[in-house]
Amino acid sequence: MPATNRLIDFSTPYVEGSGVQALRASSLHLVRQLLELRDVQRRHQRELLSIALWKWTEAPGAKPYPKYNIRYVTRGVLAADDAKINHEHVWPRKWIIDKLLSRRDWPSDELTDFLDTHGVACVVTIEEHASLGGKQRMGWQRYVDAGIDVWDRQLGRWAEFRGAPSEPADDVDADEAPVVVGVDLEQVIRERAGDKQDLLIELARSAEREMAVPVLGSTRDSAQPVGAYFRIHDAQIEEPTPAVAYVHWSGKVSFRLTHNDLPAGGLAGATPATHQKYGVACHVSDNATLRTAQHLLYLALAKLRDDL
Image (cartoon, rainbow, N blue to C red; front, side):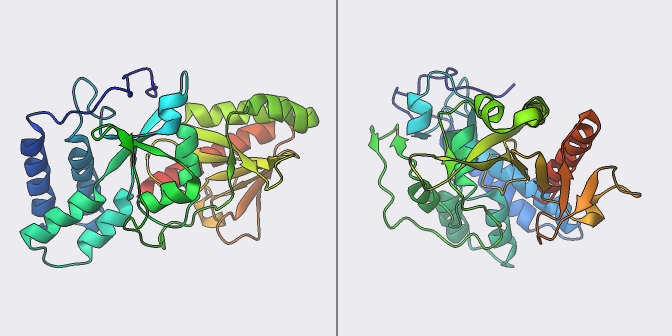
């Protein structure tokens, strides 16, 4: 089950434990050893580095929930009565791993400085997680761009990130569309989707069962903020990722797949789309096409997670 903000009193100060430095040293040593591996497949090396980076960002966490009891937390986590939360990598692990593997040699001090700067985590709500996935820049600048305030529990003040280190997210094809928060998605579906409402509600619930989060797309019109669709983001990777599907009120669903991602023989109800990234569509109109959409959603999430 996903963790919620009731797990910890995030308003209390963060105090670094006595064992943090030993854990950081161990995870740093692990990263270095993995970078020096030879005669292993790159995908295996990347997978192990991803685990090592988890150990690095979790090392500062305080017991009994070190994954979440960390220094940085968003205003949304502090303010919500009961919200699902993520340990979000401020710089995505994929980006960090790409940088680590781009060099043949890392002097000890440079590797430590790199991980100190970029191996940072923040606790966010899953809605904020989806919003952060729609920002093109990296690091804390994504939070600035998304309008998400961050509380520094160690210093007891709101963090200032003007001039924070940032690079373009050239390896994340992110969606820049804003997100509507604080609105009941199922109620909006009932108001907008007509005779497709029950089918689309079940598709949204299917996404949640697959550790994904459906979020409402927004317009720039404050009088009518809800857009023409909701989109589905992964909630398991816990770092910025593009939407895996766009679900329109008409029942049309576009998936972040290509024809080559489909099973041999295809899927009944799945049709090609012209979009370069979202190349497979399905029109949900009955239980059979709902099952097709659920299958496509599973494939899109699996592809995204495998690409890490």
